[in-house]
Image (cartoon, rainbow, N blue to C red; front, side, top):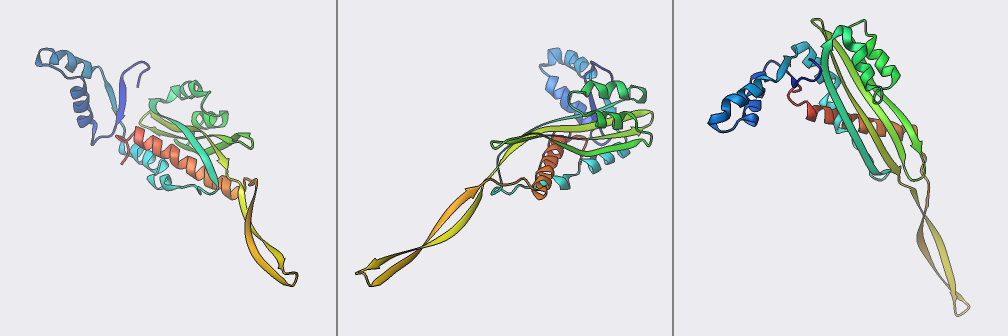
Length: 229
């Protein structure tokens, strides 16, 4: 794929229908249909081999998108996800991945650029960038490189996310009594509550990372539905 081109990746079973959709999108009255046909021809497509499609489906597996958060623990949850998928000549990999230095960590860029096996993966890096009583913020990323037929496929998802931990609410009881006529005692039990800050445990971190990982995968699959099954 070339810089500046109107390009799209596809898989063998859907490329023809995608070009038809592009034609309809740019189509119009019969008098100008030829011009729109030329517009469609300006698009360049690359058909990924099934092996590359299989790697994307495996790495961005739909089974990981079902992770949920405990609503009694996490609140004010938000996440912003961005995704990329591209192919390039193998000799250009380092040049391309360095273009994303503001989105991918150096470790991930080096992993993608120096992949001797032809298949390298960064399953997930999660970094906490702030931790305050009001909210905790994380950045995260996952990436894969797959080489095929002299070309390289690179796909990744990045996220910025935040949440607030709910306070721990503890219930306790007190017994209150008062005398009646200085002889009898009337007693009752009252239930009360108190709250204190919740600690972010390893189990909670694991739950949060699974949730954000699912969000990244879901976003990737939605944005590349033509490549994934």
